[in-house]
Every structure is written in structure tokens, then in C-alpha cells.
Image (cartoon, rainbow, N blue to C red; front, side, top):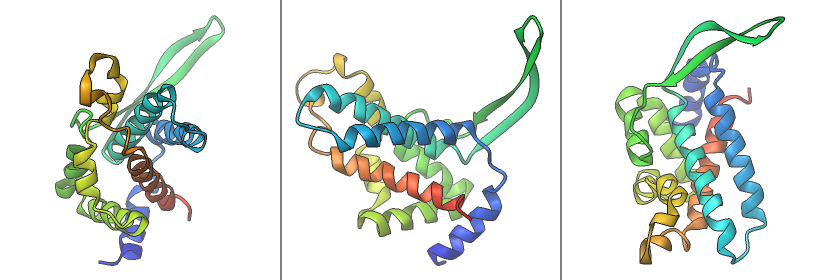
Length: 179
């Protein structure tokens, strides 16, 4: 199936999706983009950037396996209450990006193929391999203070690859909603 056919199928399938998960994924990615554009060789920016990129990738991959719960009332002020909804994902593969992607190989093969093809077009690389290599970037970067030696420098030479990986996920998802 061609990428445009997959995109058309997915647009129909997910056009109803109004997800706070995607909103947060976009926000984390856009903030990471700002940091990436001004990134220098100083380590103080590196791990916050990797943390944002890892979290953004995770949320992009969880966003298509959602359960939107019923609205419930939350006291807001003495004048009234707010209606809130619950949003959760059934893609419960923790923070492991490789497993989050593989979830769709059985749950939504069209989405799985679309993401793989878009990534190949965007970067010339294999999404499954890169997600496997960087599967724990969020956990590793956010807890970098617990690491020693080579683990502490694990992703420092791969920042561009990780950035373009998440940028491809962002572009892939955004393309589904630009109709």
C-alpha cells in the first residue's frame, strides 16, 4: 500500500481524535525544537532536550490507542464546577519506544506501516531499528544523575538522530490532521 493511501485511511480512522496526549506531545516536541536550534556543546542543555524528545516520542506513539472516559464534575470555585474527561492509552508498554511502536503492528498495521514509511522517506533510516536503539531515551535522560561512565554519555553523539526521529513522528501525526 502506498503512503498516501495509508494516510487517507488513517485520516478517516482518526479524524475524531481530540487528544490531550497529542497536545502534550506537540508541546514537548516544539519546546525541544527550540532548544535543539540553539544547542551548543554544553551538557546543561543536552539532557533536558533528550528528556523532552523521549517524552514527546512516547506520547506520539501512545496517542493512537486511546480510551476517552466519561465527563465528570470537578469543583472549580464556589460558583460552579468544571467538566473534565479522562483520557488514557491502552498502549501500556511503559516508556519503551520500540515496544510502543510494535504494539501497532498487531493493533493497527496501517498506522505501523505509515509511520515506518514516513520515517524512511524523512530520514532514509529504519524506524524499528532507531526506536530499538533509543527505546529508553526518556528514562535514561531524566534519571541521568543516577548513571555513571559510558551510560552518562550514551546519547550525546546521537542527539541529531533522536531529534529527527521525533521530528518525523511529529510530521507524520501532523500530516494526518492537515486536511
